[in-house]
Picture 1 (cartoon, rainbow, N blue to C red):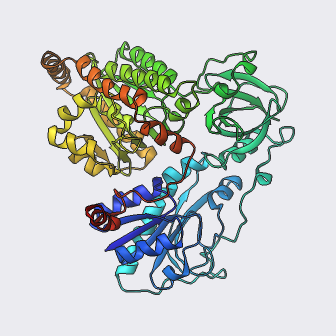
Picture 2: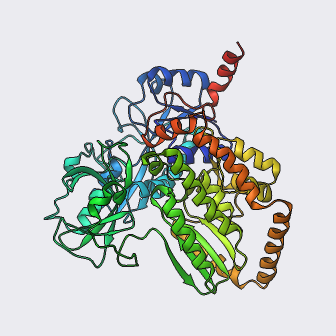
Picture 3: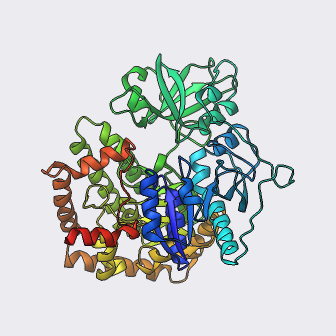
Amino acid sequence: MRILLLSHAFNSLTQRLYVELRELGHDVSVEFDVNDVVTLEAVDLFQPDLIIAPFLKRAIPESVWHFHTCLVVHPGIPGDRGPSALDWAVLNNEVNWGVTVLQANAEMDAGDIWASAEFTMREASKGSLYRNEVIDAALRAVLSAIEFYRSGDTHPRALNYADSHVRGKLRPLVKQAHRIIDWQKDNSEAVLRKIRSADGVPGVADKVLDRRLYLYDAHIEKTLTGTAGELIARCGGAICRATLDGAVWIGHLRDKQGVPPIKLPAMHLLGRQLEYLPEITPGPDSGYRDIWYERQGRVGYLHFPFYNGAMGTEQCERLRLAFIDARQQDTRVIVLMGGADYWSNGMHLNLIEAADSAADESWRNINAIDDLALEIINTQSQITVAALQGNTGAGGVFLARAADRVWARRGVVLNPHYKDMGNLYGSEYWSYLLPRYAGHENARRIVQLRLPMGVSEGRELGLIDEIFESETQDFVTAVEQNAEALASSPDYEKSVAQKNRDRQRDEKEKPLQAYRDEELEKMRLNFYGFDPSYHVARYNFVNKIPKSRTPLTIAQHRRTREAVQGAL
């Protein structure tokens, strides 16, 4: 079918649906819902069989839903209505939640129900639940709704609160008043729920050192205590604040009046004001852990669940040292686990934007990532595996390809391109890695595309070696089983010897330093050259400046007209 995805932005859910529906053979185009005129024009140009709205911030115009079947993806159980469905689910500590696909009509979220899917809630932030459980449930519900539509039975279930299956209700927008933290009365669990319900948008407004800041990235502290409300420790970029019955770590803050007004590591924002706090060494029960290593038999696992997958200069340096330490252990396999939400999204654009010199920090950041990639590529004593639990983009894709094997969970979305960030050239030794693993033709295709891809396409192109058909936790178990099998393989020694011979051969043909020099020469122009495209694109991205038009890469219905106009 011809399916138009009508969305406020090309967010993670919209990308997942775009990838999955295209893989199923549907003709899919995307339009950003900027205003009624643009939406009407998109419908007229594409003439879709079905319109699906995965992520909207306003009602679909009547002139569209009255003449076309429009299915809205709502992140709530049947009967749930309102703009803060998942926020309330986290705040109210719901045990089970779901996604409902309903038909757009004159009343928001009150249309006929085409499909729904439920999931078990876990202790996590709203953003993490959205990127995992919500998106997986949304895909199941959308595919069910499409099959229902294709069957010709256009009589979905009307919303009826007398129906025992309809457990939801109309709820208001969650405001800051609903999330106010009373540090003298709220225990750690209550504080966590309030912050997690607002992570990543809009954050919880609070006062820190008499400054009105927004709190994000909260984690429990299991050993430290103090006077409720007081700051009691720091660890890396995070700060620890005492609660009524313990303490919580707050990893990121945002100053709405700051320059720039973006999310940053807490210590980066408050820095010198908190140098008096004791520095905690992170461990399993205390501190803010964003890098840790664990060993199971002959396999070592290096975890790095960086917030939003962003890897700043200092994080890359610490991760490189942790990898070198892991390499010195008596293991046969090192698995780079990343995090459950993201494996890596490359450079830390927020920290770059906040730096005194964005160009200088960009240069430091890309070199730090290159240093890490170099260590992974040159590992001689173990087989390395990148295990993609969550999505990965830009330099993160090529950093993963630096490993000997890349394993991915079904449902992961890859964005292996830099071009949308102001035609950034990119590094991480991609000019060596892509031809080696993907071949020259696929390498050209990968770097020219600006589209997300699923793991099936990633495997076809050589970015991924193996796909595991499992949910997140099951994926970890599958990785452990396969990593142990790899370490126990009778061909292990031969595999290590062969990869070292291949590396030596490649180095003689063209040293890695030559690839790096060529890539960085182009990136130096991106950072310091006359063309400001990278800096403009980065500013718009970190400050969440909405796009005024849908990129032609995803709005295929506009390509022909644009081409004709360009020729004229």
